Length: 567
Image 1 (spheres, rainbow, N blue to C red):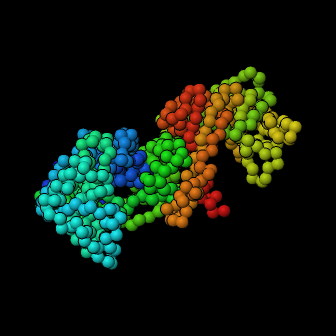
Image 2: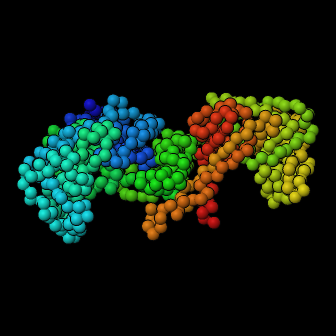
Image 3: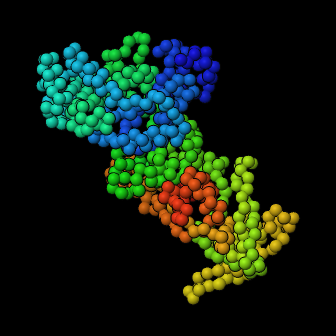
């Protein structure tokens, strides 16, 4: 139980509006001073970053005020649900750094209580069985300005409704033949009050209850009651449930009294540019093979972001930055990427990799010789130490780092020009070797042996510094370069186009034959964060192995997308 004086010690300054409402309830002693939230995902797909915002709210607010948070799966539609999704959801929550301890629940835990409540409402004349089709029911709902029309089955006797509902559950009727509706008010200004459906027939095995049930509760009927059965004090959800709140309260009051009643509070959902958040559309992408699965690094799923190399802290930092309000907004994906860069900059090991290699031969360096130079692991972390990297007569540099006829202010390598090889020596270009078509095959240089980094003569300055890899010691690898999945800023707003037509055809590029330093290969364990210097942040992919190194580019060092789009 949260003590009131603990709540009073939390300054309201800096609290978002949900936290302020919770603090006020606790200070007022509501629900005996308890705080119990819940995160209620449907196990019909993988979680995306929008769910991460809800997770951070539900679990985070419980942590902040000394309460508890339940994990409750809303498993009321067995047709779409799978144990795979249950396991994936639990893994995602743990990866974000939250834990529900022993409070793992399922809406299916409450099927007996919900069924009994439905029977009670029928006996009290508050629910009836309707034989109409879903289309007929929808047509009779009216509109916000036109009252609905009563169902011809609305005044069935209590005895007939009881008999029909029990036979529905016994499996006597086909799916769609009958539903159980609450008898409320077909002329209500709130469309959700116009005799909402409470139960429908579904003849499909449930992943937990098997074939025990043939009727399954609708979300609006199951959700508030499940909150009540669990002792949830604050049901925090997104803004689309604002019009559902009166119905939530209507059903809950059939169980609750003045001593305890859950409270629903709504906040804005997370929307991102160049992204779709519809679970239905994400499922289409997976099922149609337009992405490589739910954990494809281009997907906005938590598992996709984890595979791509995002950190839990970067996602939390982004969510903290955009905050929680009562107003819907479209957040720039650049804000998320900035948060990812900031966190990766703190934790990533600096290493050398050459994506588009061209060989450089240092003609005055002894043939067959090599030496080790020291490389700083992370200048942001004084405790990260150094690692050794081999240097030899032949090295690789990026092909774009050399130009025969450079423009002004080109501070990389060119004929008669000098550059520093990071952590090693200054070299000077003395010539090139070309093939019969005039393409450069090799670059020839000399090195200044007095300019090795860390030695007294290394103080000599040149304007350019290049990354490189020893050709003799280089390890071959493959990189997957990811970009935004959609080429349209707000796909959801393009209502006249199929969302699949807006996919970015350049969202994935695979580059083979890159050259990496041995230290990368030796430390390419899953989850390791690397900064390939001057290129970007990378992490080993799940498909990577000792003999087949594959790296995902988590993100480039700078945001070049916005600049490209403005041209």
